[in-house]
Amino acid sequence: MPVYEYTALDEKGRRQKGIVDAAGMAAARQKLREMSVFPTDMKETFSEGKAQTGAEATGGSLFKKAGLAEIAVMTRQLATLLKAGLPLVPSLTVLVAQTRHPQLKKTLVQIREEVNEGNSLTGSLSHFPGIFSPFYINMVRAGEASGTLDLILERLADFFENQQALRMKIRAALAYPLLMFLVGSVVLFFLVAFVVPNITRIFGEMHQNLPGITIFLIAVSGFLKTFWWVCLLLLFGLIFGLRYAVTKTDRGRYIFDGMKLKAPLFGPVSQKVAVARFSRTLGTLLQSGVPLLGALEIVRNIMNNRLIADELQSAGKAVEEGQGLAATLAENGLFPPMAIELISVGEQSGTIETMLFRIADAFEKEVEASILIMMSLLEPVMVLTMGLVVGFIVVSILLPIFEMNQLVR
Image (cartoon, rainbow, N blue to C red; front, side, top):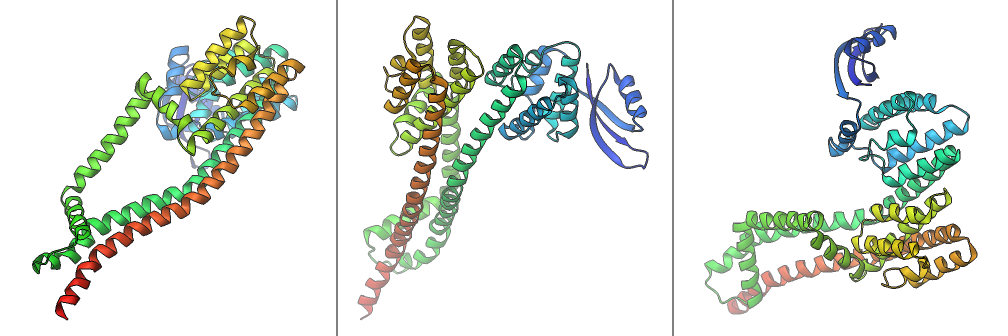
């Protein structure tokens, strides 16, 4: 059923905006009039159909796309409504009324209409791959099949909230050093490109032999002042070139993912983040009744590291042939020994879900501790580096002045 976005006036003449679903434009206007709302402008947002609704969900502005936080809140609210005994369609109606995110609100309207027409919630969610990941859809499928949809949605909400909390901690830890780096870089660029030339101009007028570091500083300063736009173009070109190589080419992505795991300091942290995500996602799927082979395939599709994704694909084939998961993951050394041992214990004792959650908890705590240590070390290193650069500039300027003073005496 088509969905329309409207601007209307209520009985008191107040302007309001919203969305309404109806069989056609005339039916939508009639539906609004019955609600004592008088439309002044109306347009169709998206229509029924798998390809079109899926494209609509994946398209649009970056700022309009529903993020992890919005999905987590929506999932928690739906789980609460279902647990309270409210049927699925009325629960979706309540969600539509209280959701503020435009894209998610439109998507929920379409999902509600499809469910109301007899489609399953899993089938309706699968029409919006840009919003709901394979992990989310398969979790809901398991909940519908087992009759425990409210419990599955609670687990999904817990999972997304944990992921969001970890992301926020990482971003908060990186915010201050990144701001310092950007501000310091801009200040140093302005100092070298525009302030230093005015100070060193007097040395050229006196035709004095200058120290080597002063000559080097004047050369760098003159280049930046004349060709600063070339430097910016090269910088942006390098950034976009690397981004294209990483996101559009398989070889570039493999090289970048390998560097993420092997880079000094940041490599172990990236590995722990990947292992924590793998463990929590796989544990959540297994706990919800998804078979191991299907769960491994889902986890492989949501991993953001190609090397680990390929390792999981090989592990899935080995498990299908009757081998153990722990022994397979231990072959390439991408997973830490502690994670391998705990998975092995879980396989032998039949408590693999519990062990996976323990691995996720342990590595998430290690990630937080590692980031805090790295950030505490990064700040003084950045201050020291900028201090050395400023000191070099000061010495380069003062040395000729001291030599001039000696000549005067």
